[in-house]
Length: 593
Image 1 (cartoon, one colour):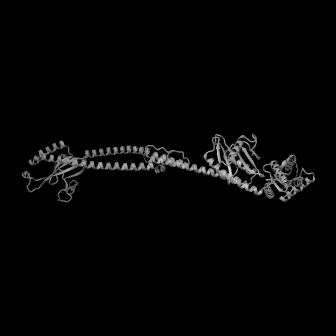
Image 2 (cartoon, rainbow, N blue to C red):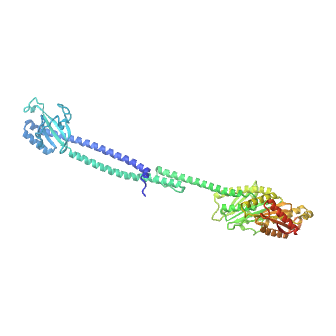
Image 3 (cartoon, rainbow, N blue to C red):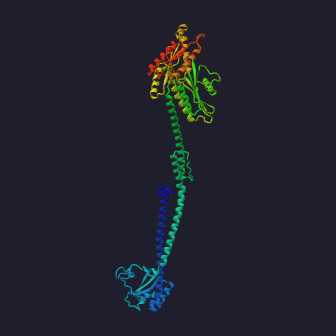
């Protein structure tokens, strides 16, 4: 589709060409006017000079005949001159204005009125005044002529025939034809115009090519470069050949484009890093407890954020004057998050090979920062706070997708946030857990029950149950073996409870030898868990200090919300009543309210 005229007129190419062509046309026009004016004046001067020479020749040729006053000879001489020089006309006018002799015989006898005839008034502007010029231009039926007039004075040799008192005997006129001269001038003008027009067209074409090649094309290339840059394509490269300012501008544009590209890449990297970090921190901040949920969230975020195949979190936690290692991991093709606790290095084969390698690295380098292995596709990041080792992050990616510099910087920022979250969770855990058993406190238990109730208010399907657990015959243990043994039994029971409930269930020490487990679901489902837990404890052998081995059982009361109570106190009270019913029923059993 043709470009609109208005758009073409606004282009620099049109304005530049129009200016140059206007200047060229003005120059050629001025040259033509100058040539025409000069040639016309020059030809006119030449015609005057030629006519003057011819007039003098005629005067000399007629002089003998006029002196002899031989009119026959005068006429013959005039005819000969008319035939030889071929003037437009030639003749003698008497003193009274009558044409006495003329090359054109039709003029003989014609009388000119010097006061009215334009041929006379052109020279005699006032009556009886001398002529102001010796030649005039006249338009005749034969064409334009230049008339030369020579006054015939009464010289001494003429007085033999003329009255001595008569000063002017007449005039001799000679008409030089100018038709051919003007035709020549018109021919010259026409050819000059044609030559100028052809020159104008050729120069216009040459100027158009030059402007297009050295001005318009570079500007179009630069314009395209700016358009591409405006569209966000900073890989476009402007190539301008031929040197000069436009090539320098193209070079500077390419340099600027690459600088903008680097700046945008840096901005995108910062935005990506900020966005990923914000998402990571936002989801991480939703879990503040040192609990399975926090560990699971960290592992899942590592998988999602870094598009990993495998991710693991290894944590070190104090437990009754010793340390245990909590290991949580997940693989991308498995939706489950695995978890285990080990008081000592795990036996060979108990963990996946990649986890055993990570554990060994952490054991040898507990505070080594961030290390990358296997050509940059494996990241091992030590976690610490206030020079205290917290744990280790392990991330495995496909070998074809190693960590780039941007992801390495993001990993460092993520580690800092995880360290803060773990440190906060560590302090929070100490505040909400029992120091002996590591289970949650009574106050935390009551707060979680209120959360369950609030959740049920928004979703009637979200029911929950309470397991009230009590050690059977625990007072004789304390009385017989002492409180240290009793504490070991309570701690081992807490471990059994923790190991045999679901990850999202909440186990709390409610007081003394009483424990509470909160679990989602109805009372019948909770009853099955309670039965399994009773059986597990009855089969467990408690290993205490000095090689002492004990067996013990538990009784459990089960109550569900909202079927057994509408408030936290009512549900706990129902579970407590069910617990006493189990005690009265023979212990080592569970009872639903």
